Length: 210
Image 1 (cartoon, rainbow, N blue to C red):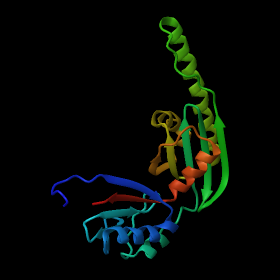
Image 2: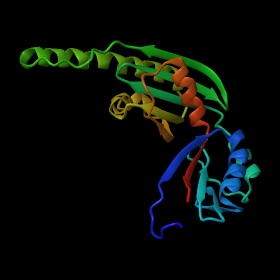
Image 3: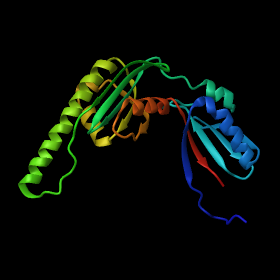
Image 4: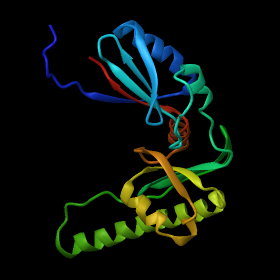
């Protein structure tokens, strides 16, 4: 017997649009017949047992079409010109895309020393050197961001938030228009960037399973 008032955790899922129809079908198999509706710019589903989900389009787009999975999937269209910018202290990755096609990429790593247990002046010198190494990485991210993303407004961001604030403080990147979701990636490598691009184009799902 299900206990009344029991809290059920909300799960966040990212899913390629091509897999959404199968996911919704499986959701119905697990929880019973599911009624779809369009609410608040998303596609919502509520099943017979009370489980529910809300699917949202990527790039902060709102869905205003019919309550149909196929119509929702058809609305997942990447911008004609957009970008991805990932920054951490240890490196950066920048990509410019046209729809789903990657036009140009730059990935760079910078050595940043780990923390030290030394104290006093040694610790202070170490911290200054570490900050300088991170600064070099940020400057490289800015330069390649300006080069690749000039004229590109929608951009999906990820990495380390403090590092990203440093990079975006450069006025040459003021034209960028960040759109969700934030991507909490590890140190950028090409495979990390490729996964981030796929996540940026994916449908986001908020799911409550009862």
